[in-house]
Image (cartoon, rainbow, N blue to C red):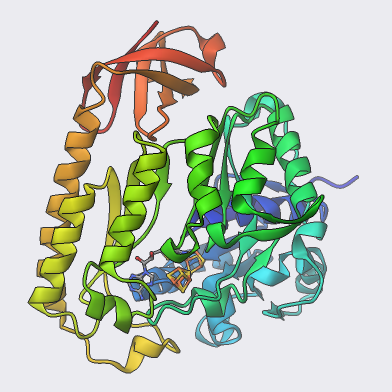
Length: 441
Ligand code: SAH
Ligand code: SF4
Ligand code: F3S
């Protein structure tokens, strides 16, 4: 057998791209590739890209520019672009950067081995179809020894989005909502647990809209979570990202009843102004969102909220922005992401008048200061509490291990290497800039 060819993958964007990159490594593994960490060693470089904001998309072209010398030094090097920029721009990428050999959209990854063969034959390959067949049926999970894997993993359960928020490219780059069958997801989760995974994050662009074929009729996300919770050795379940309008009663109940479902929920609202929410096509009001959080907190009082905000959406006035600040004050997020609005080609909001970069930057600064303040006080409030920690790896100091709390804080404690991959009970004894200190009990 010939020596394996070497594949370097760089991943941008959301967690789904992280999951997809692993699958592409698996798919190209069947074509004789092994993954390397240094692009200079590679026979093929794949960029798994994100199109969500203009800056994210432009990064791809600057990265391709940086790869020029590698291609000059090794003319056989193949360069591929995958992900949401590939889907959105297609052949345009090869026009702008002729050294790109392969462009593959998110729904065509199972066709990568055939595309690779074409590229090896000296042709270019482009596939941005939304094929009928289920790509997941043909995408092997990467195999590896148990010890080499982190105890956390992503599992894509749903892909695509039918919501069409006025600012967002995802419905165009990922296509219509598709849910994977429950039985397959249970099998994949069991397989992950056998390989040492204890914490699974279920992924979907609109994950709480999940409605997959179950073993006894259609399953909701809540039902899927209840079935997953029966797997021995799976200790923690999370899911992301959710839309407020799909936060159904059975899912809220699950937060109160399923112990393995972690008390942390990413539920983006984007704005606290009803006028802006309407302009964004979010289809709910700020008040409805706040009442929803009240119900979730009633079911699970220790739940921490996380969210996303867009600042400077077309039409946003100072009064609208004040509503966003007020909503943020009321929710007090444990963590939240906020972004300056970026007009995306082909989306409904793209033609509307932007508030201007100076206004948006200034508002973003104010919102981020508030979020950081809440985030820090939430972190400090952990001190003195007892909680479980999923131990992920050795810390920087000798004898130190690092794990994650149920609320996604990193915490370090003195403990043996043998705790790696296990859940241990700790008391939080200190709060530092980016982590907590803990003591095993
Ligand atoms: N599926 C997720 C969204 C994925 S995009 C959801 O429905 O919440 C992640 C975040 O990027 C969004 O929540 C939004 O806050 C931000 N975002 C999306 N499009 C954007 C745009 N055009 N400009 C700025 N931020 C954007
Ligand atoms: Fe984009 Fe809205 Fe769909 Fe989220 S719900 S992926 S923001 S269109
Ligand atoms: Fe980006 Fe596509 Fe994810 S646009 S955020 S990589 S779905």
